[in-house]
Image 1 (spheres, one colour):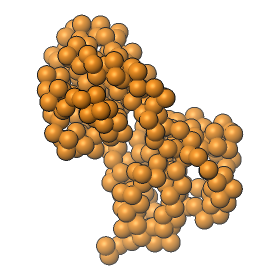
Image 2: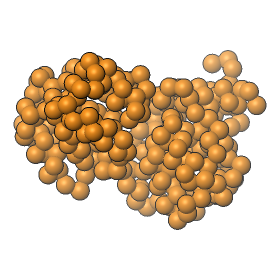
Image 3: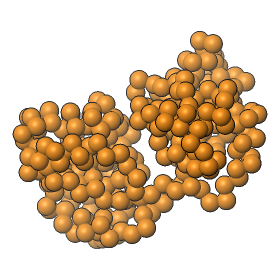
Image 4: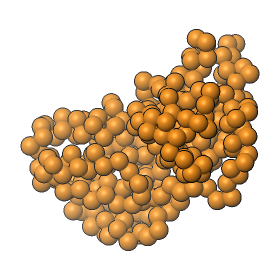
Length: 266
């Protein structure tokens, strides 16, 4: 790439180590120096009881809503462990939030019926309502929502208010990484980090937990804050951060491009 707008810029990535590679590569292609410093780790849930119960009664669901690629990974792994196959999902309508989530499902040979244009609870609710032909048609539908142990409640609540029955089942959990080097992180943020990229609300919340503060503004003063989308940006604001960069679309490609554009304009 001839233009390297991030030459001399250090970007700190807070997403789980297992998922940081693509964003790192994209930022490096713009000339950035990247430091991967995960504030979350993705793990199996404390218990599979609710998920197993849902998998044993798949035939009772009309819709399956995946909110992330993690949800897809852990759900399909458990599906296989229970002796089921993706063919068992054939009769269920599937909604995938985000293009990457949809791609992950396609790669696993799972059909996708709806990919909302807006990857927020509100956007998903609007897309589902439109797909079924109006809010009244949500009434009586059985919906399975496999997701992280901590998730936003707008979507299940909106669906239930419209008369659907929603089972929110914990499929994975995001936890603080073990052996976290708090000293290294604070030195990095105070010194070499020019920009911090947040890819989910839990990356923000966990950073606040690591520093035992509700005001990250003090710790990240002078650092450019980039958030992948409005829900993450809202979490950042809640913890005292001013969000400088937020792409129009919520993908890592758009986030990397938005960071590059920001520095191009400086």
